[in-house]
Length: 379
Image (cartoon, rainbow, N blue to C red):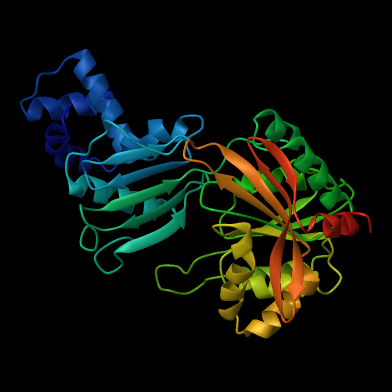
């Protein structure tokens, strides 16, 4: 059934005050002068359910294995990322009003509002899908909707190796990093697999240890029997009730953690993580966005500035808190690969990431920091 026909039926069905049955739909179709057949009624009921439940016409995409993102740019452009970059789909909306209606409903399902007074929203649905929307009053070519699908794939370190994303040498090193309780950060761009790799590494933590995981949006699902997850909370429609990551990191430290994990450092909470790693909490870890391993110290410096730390203080904290950086990159084909393992090295007042092991399609190469890495792992 076309979007126009559905629009004709909605006002009639809206008076029911409940979900319409097939009989309700058939009666409404007759009143609107539409042809009523068994197949037409069933098709209309299915369309109405898709339009009022879940993500509507996007549901099928969200359920596809391997899908990481679904992006809507107005009514005529729907893209999907199945792990190999963005592909445009054949899905179309009838109008920008349809996109707006879906975006507002998804926001409402997460307890948020999306309207002319609040023209953008960032929220998480109950199934873990991250929702971001901007109304057409601010965006062209219309209302934009971005859905980020949490990883449904839980890979072990061995499976990373089998897929060609992790060199066997890197796998052995990372096992040692976890075993000797080295503090580390996993870096990379959006969609490179930072969270998936971190989950695999957390699965290696001895089961007698207690993990305290702090996240902005719940994504980490390590194969570990003793995980406590703390999730940040955005402000409600009245702008109150927010709980920030920095607060949760401090709460985690009071909950007798063996390892503190920050799902992703996005702001001032990096200061609290560095403080934790400098006060006896060994083996802590997290992820951070960075274009390369070399950029990680500068990225941490920028985030810590949001927490009030000056440059010298940040690098002093970093030098004694984090020992290893693991960088993932994603090639043009979409293939993810652990490209570099670096060690934190202090040059004068500042910390830099010194390459210890580098990996590409030709194999593994030793970097200038390899000897230092061996000393860190042999402690």
